[in-house]
Image 1 (tube, one colour):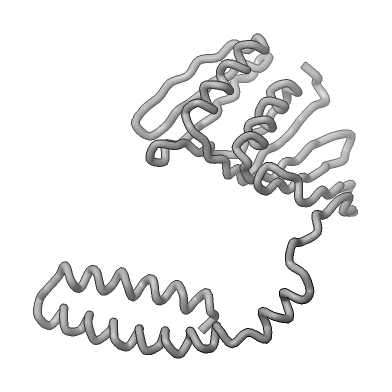
Image 2 (cartoon, rainbow, N blue to C red; image 1 turned 60 degrees about the horizontal axis):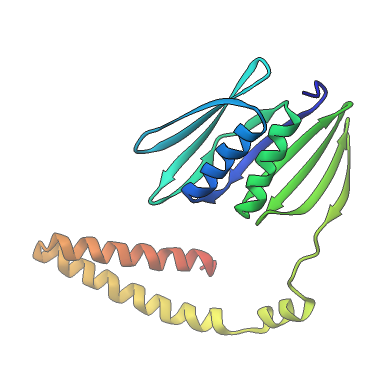
Length: 198
């Protein structure tokens, strides 16, 4: 174990199936780690002995898949490599902070790919790498010139008025199930209004 090695993993958004967790367990065992795991209806927990520390990786069940939860500070280089392989294989999102000699290198990862790399040294920070956006200037101009949002806004307001009258009628008639469905539709319309900034 390299004592100067320290990596912090934040804002992890990794989703994968049970097979990928089993592959991680297999890789950890092959690397000689002492570990145990447990599972409930909600969580899958892998506890890995790394030197004197016990690192607990927590996976939350989401239907028939899993997502890793929590932030982790790893001081074991090989364990860091395995966690980064998991981020890459699951095409996940994460913020990875590498601490070295009073310096922090921060990697922003989206879909398993580094999109931004920043070096922080004291009060100064320097962008080492930033992935160029896929949107072109022409596409931005087209989006500003488009009337689709304005046209949709008019229709959206009419849909909203209609749905409010449906809700009023359902509440007045005491039809709770219809009222609940109407509220759901109103919530969907509300979300769309927020997206269109109305």
